[in-house]
Image (cartoon, rainbow, N blue to C red; front, side, top):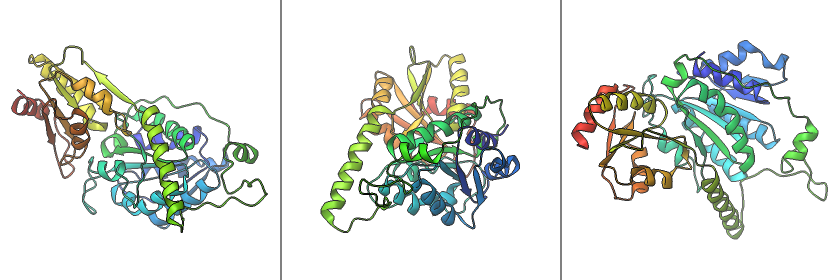
Length: 352
């Protein structure tokens, strides 16, 4: 099935309570598949096409405030419209999952694949000092697997989590093993697992208040300090990455998502030509695997960052390597997906 279809199937099976979204290419199959599967008849999951992305994010805000496992999906311009709501959820410490199947930009751009939302996702596109947990799948299988993982991390840390995919992964078809069906949580289970939720009660039996607002600056500073401490815990415990053929590698390619798939083929071609290349794939784009990348890059002749954008992740790579090895970039823009031979050529021209 397609990556977008896998997202829908897996969300039902991992016990999602609700989906609120709006169609936009290249992710519309998520909503279309959910509508076709009619999970409200089997698991009780709510599926609603909202009137806009702004409406859908506020429905996610409300569902998350009630302790429900809710998610949405969109593509780059639609995710841009959701940034205020995501910042609200980060400030109110609400768990929710967002799937971004990226397309080229800026603005409406193109419906073709891109990875140019890296900054928007990892830097927090809304206002204030906050972070979103970002997972970058590079296969249809990971699209399915990361839904449950995203919900787990979102609820573990009471924080928004994003699956940052792109039009290549969302539209391509592969075999996929779907997770087993989880039972839907009861209201009592939600109250026990999410005592902060609006359906719960405080010690004096007053309803919980869900808000990101603090009128006193001292209280707002304490809230921010608490958030920063939580982000430090996430960075300490939730880094994920994949390394391939690093034992004898002389040059290192760093890529995520679909670009990493293409880089795998480029490494195969490079090694046939006598160039010992290896791959480092960040799976969590935030928290970024800084220490692990620094170790992987140590002693290499150079690092080539491959992205389908003008150069965004390269900033995190350079900060991680800290000037010890040369770091170069190769990318294609406007929705053009690079060929493996282009990456090999870039290795020769930029690093050798």
